[in-house]
Image: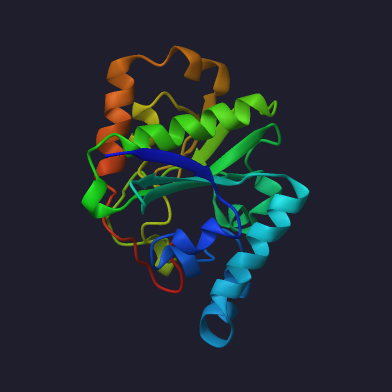
Length: 215
């Protein structure tokens, strides 16, 4: 069984799992995202976002294939490219960090180490480009009903996931803490931390879904 990592591009965008391919949770502000999902074309909006980000910043994600089948992906970008950041009570994200928004392994491939491959690939990519850190908003109550009627669904990864792989809390919150990983620490990740990453991402390997958007 062969494994292959590639950059997220307009060509590989079509290989994102559904409904992630048409999700604009992170890419648009809440009002624009709702309009796109109810009266527009969210798939086209996502394609436009990826195109703009590639042109202005560069690679914004990685996909992994097992043999010829897409098996998972991770996405990241500077906070300024992600309007949804503004709704989080622990924002804004730091200007010197890229924001990790999405990590997903297709259910049939969960538990095989693909999640670890994806996050490490993202870390290597960002470190080579001079990015100092990765930040993320975690969900401290992952799987529980959304607060105040706001739909986050599975678009926000568990806070425990980030903590288990070396992130540190930089702004606490009972629901959505902001966490940070200094990229130089990725060079010395120990095997047990890598295993924790694989296990936690594997638990997220089923298809994601949420109200107006999913990612």
